Figure 1 (cartoon, one colour):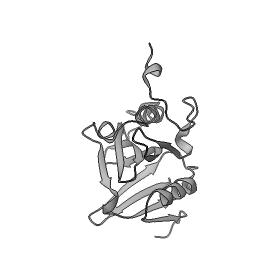
Figure 2: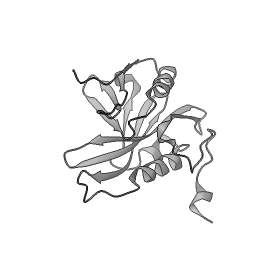
Figure 3: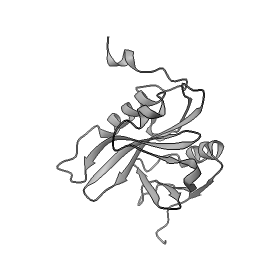
Length: 173
């Protein structure tokens, strides 16, 4: 038996050989709730990039730790994006406690979210997703400058009753 035999069968049409990082995947989890999966996102830390798979459940946003890579070109590892997507695909249908099993995973209650800001990518800027709460802003960047932010924004507006603000990249603040 291979690892592929043990992976859950999501109800969404997710081809394991396709690069899902450029689209938003909407599935129904084991509890019958709609879940939005966004892959390819990372947080910037002083010395590392921390990769997370984002699962938007009706009551909270689950930021599932996938892996970490170093900023230094000499220490970076190839395939980190494929590994993150593989982790996300394996967890797609899992309950919330599995999504948050790693100590570096965290959740943000949708009740605490003031707004979600999405900035499209460009030649100069990576796409950006900001989850704004009263206490802090949690920022994520996407690896692919051509990431379709419109489909993610539409899915989030359908899922949540919070402001989802889209913007275009600008050199001016």
